[in-house]
Structure formats: C-alpha cells, structure tokens
Length: 320
Ligand code: SER
Image (tube, rainbow, N blue to C red; front, side, top):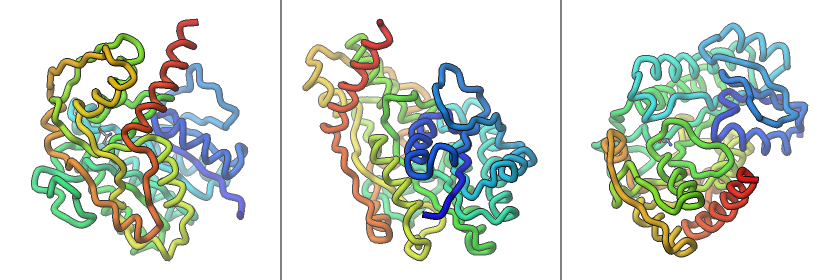
C-alpha cells in the first residue's frame, strides 16, 4: 500500500477516538495526525496531536503542508441537539468546516477526503421506513440542513474538480469508549451507562421512538471499507445510506433487561423528541451493498451484550 498521511479533524470526539486507532493500525502511527479544537485531557496517545479550529483554513493548509498530508477525515461538527441551541454557530462550524476541508483538498491535490453525513439529512416528508438512497429530504434541524448542503458540496467538488470525496449517512452510533456530544440518538448510549451504573434511566424520547442505529465496530468497518474501495466503485458522491439495526427505547430496554432484570426506565420527552420524530425509522442501504459490499454484523442482542460487558469493566475500573 502506498504511504498515506491522514489528518483527522474532531479527532477527540466519539468517532474520532476510535477511528484514529484503526487508521493507525492500517497506515502506521507515524502517518496519523489528530486535530481537535479541544486539547487532549487524560488522553493517552502516541499519535501526533495539533490543535485546530476547522474554521481556520489557513492553519489547516499549514498543517497539511507541514505533515505532507494526503487524506483528510473531517469529523468535526456540531450535532443535532446542540445545533438547535445555537443554530447560526452550528451552521458556521459545519459549513465553513467542510468548505475549508474541500478547498484545501482541491488546492493541495489530496488523494481522498472523508466527510460523514447523517440520517438527519432526512425530514418529515421523507418515507419513514426503509428510506431510499434518493428520496425527498427536507431536513428540519440546522445540523441536517448543513450536512445535506455538505453532501451537495462534496458531490460538486468530485464532479467539478475530481476530488475523491466519500461520505456515509451514519445512523445513531452506539459505543462505550468516548461519549458522544449533543446528538438526539445519545439516549441509546446514556441508557447503557445508566444500566451499568445505577439500574435506572430517564429517557428523553418516548418509548416507541424507533430510530436507525449502529454499533461502533460496524461504523468503523463501514468507513474503512468505503475508503478502501476502488474509486470507480464509488458511484454515490453525495453520501451513502448506511444501515444496521433499528430500535426504540422500549426495545433496547428489553434487550438490556435480559442481562439486568431490575433495570427500570421512565420517560420524559424533551425538545429532542421533535427532532427524532422528523427522522426515518429505518434505512435502505442496498446501494452501499451493491457498490462496495456493505453488510452489518452487530444485531441489537449482540451489541447489548458487548456494551454491557465493556461498560461493566469500565465502571469497575473507574471505581478502583
Ligand atoms: N447521532 C446524530 C445525532 O443524533 C445523528 O447523526 O445528532
């Protein structure tokens, strides 16, 4: 494999912390540059770290030159729930961020760009179940609007400048290593932490709110498989629908109760309910399967077991 040097934005986030380890395994530790707005705290890594605000195009360009970067994974973004607290700020970060990355990608002739999209690009007019790759979008959140605009820009840079940009519409991602920040699907992680720690949880969505979800190992594998596929196989240059499992708070509670029978959940929906209600319940990812062979591995049961084992170890460890 030719040497690639990969710069990751938002590298200290939920996906970045795990994806960076996998990229380091594939491309070598010396070839991975982590960047984030935050400084790493208690973050043990032997990977290179640079502080970067994605709105600072000049510094991004300097870092690309300094490390002879050949690929960027642009993970930094303000998610759905946080975005609604300060919509214009979310728009600025999300749009300036992607435009800066695409601009640097074009200017420095980078080999590849990864830009995650989301189920939030869909809205109330979208078919709710088995949502097709191409359908009515009409997103309602500033996060969804900015990601949909980003998808269009990604395709634009591919068609106009031949920049190899690739993207996935992630569902809610469940993981135990790094908590997410400010998403609507975050309940599906909080619920596991509460089950492992205190056996009760107050959920901010109603019990039957079904949303598309995925366990982190599947999300990482999807990302690497997409990025390693031959360019001619990647027919979708906006973003691929990506699916695994779909469940409601009630269903994940039941799955947890098979391991922790006395786990109790109460429901107190807040502003995030309207966001969740505007999103699909399940996604059709057959185009991803056709183009680059996507298939998920983790069912709700398999994920639940793995989450609880790992969280129990983590809770025990934190209490030492
Ligand atoms: N997990 C994201 C959110 O809830 C959706 O992509 O904002």
